[in-house]
Length: 306
Image (cartoon, rainbow, N blue to C red):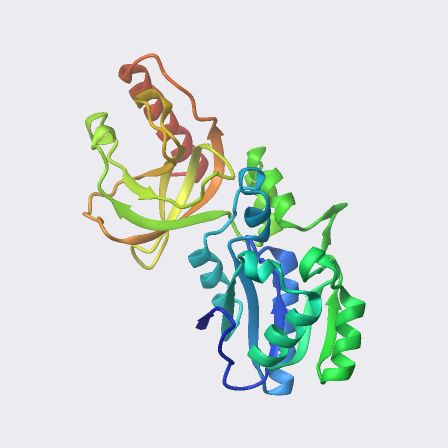
């Protein structure tokens, strides 16, 4: 997938375009992307996504913005897997936020992206003060030569599929519900780095992954599967949080892989969270922590049927 940063230059050819934050790339996003790739196939144009970095809510209210479900890298990987050929990432800064709806249409959709067909969610708003909507896009499209399609909301049971619904499921430890909304188990990717070797001293060597999700969408201890180390995912148990027993403050993902002894420092791995076993907690001593880690590993093995 080709990636453009900013909208100062034009893509080489007209496109079919979808616009959104795509945080989590859940089933609702998948429906929109499915329509995007099918329309692109029929028209012979490149299926293209316009997204933003940071999330607009982080720009307008940094300290109250919701936890991200995916990092930018994770989101781009998921978009590529969905069949997107190119993505334009617009820096969401003061200048971009000040664009009127008309300027956004002229500068971004027409001049930079050369849009011929546009697909959006039915609640999409854009431009300074969120003044732009579907009706404005339709009118502009008739004048400037692009078609506009609004995708209806995807509903599962009585719940609207949304990034907020996924966050609620994760915060409640409902991993099956989150997986249903996403269409896959929730996961985080990252590079294995050197840690303080404490887990090794406690008898459970871990792969330490420094993550960029801050604030975290969830914390706790989980049964997991890990991809990126071979043809099949590997089973394990993971702690996601700040490690309060040892005075940690920075979010860290620690994964203990069962029956595994290879050196994997520097590897980029994908951790998929299958079952929440318990909340993260502070223990009175390292001996108490060691005993709980052993119990967690046994619980994860039982869930994974190892």
